[in-house]
Amino acid sequence: MSINQFTAPRAKLRASERHGKAFREEMNRYIANNKNCAKIVVKPPSTDQVVVVTLPPPPDDLSVIVGEIAQQIRSALDILACDLARWSGASNLKGVYFPIAKTKQGYFDKRSRDKIKKLKPELQDMIDAIKPYDDHILVALNTLASTDKHQALLGVIPTIKDTDWEVFGDGDFETVEFWTRNPAPGEHGEIELMRLPASTPINLLHFKLHCHVIFRVEPVVGKEVLETLSEMGRAVQDIVRQFETHCFGP
Image 1 (cartoon, rainbow, N blue to C red):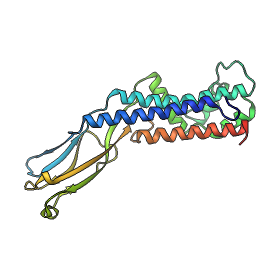
Image 2: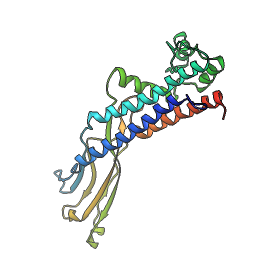
Image 3: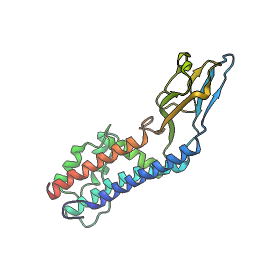
Image 4: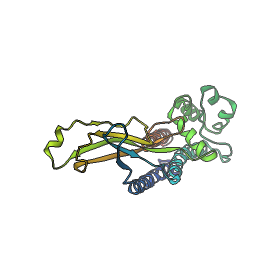
């Protein structure tokens, strides 16, 4: 550690940000490989032209990257706990972890308390004051990291955030009655976006889809992946700064 920073937790958080860049690159490849996901169909008995979009499942590589981000952020907390134990004078760091529990009762049980017993009492009090249990964001982070490490890849799925429509070359097109919609949050599979009369010159229509990726795993089902992980990273960064200020001064 430096004179005023716990450098190892910060390095872990920087690694999570690099994985975020890898996530965006993988998502860009997914989009490039699925440029023809939109098509025009007719669904009898109606004769309307229907714009539908079908987004295929993302590659497992995307889920792997999501898990790596969660792991790096969660690991930053455990390394911070070890740094705090060293600062407290401990040399044997066996059993030192940053405690997170689903419930307050679970957080204050002996198994959880033992994780920080080598820290000075004031540091234990500071961790307790964070209240990393119940609905704290660290509980969701802990669940994601544990699921990825021990059970399965974290489930994610692309969906359409919103759409832009533009008409070219025909002033009469604006007089055509048509129906359009933005998909519901988390909607996936075959998504119906627009209905147009059969006589509409569909070649004059240009639209752009804005995609994002959401979680399909508890406790963050339906939440946007990078936004959620970034929020978790910021929460951990704030915790690291809090302890740096206590241990080294502002």
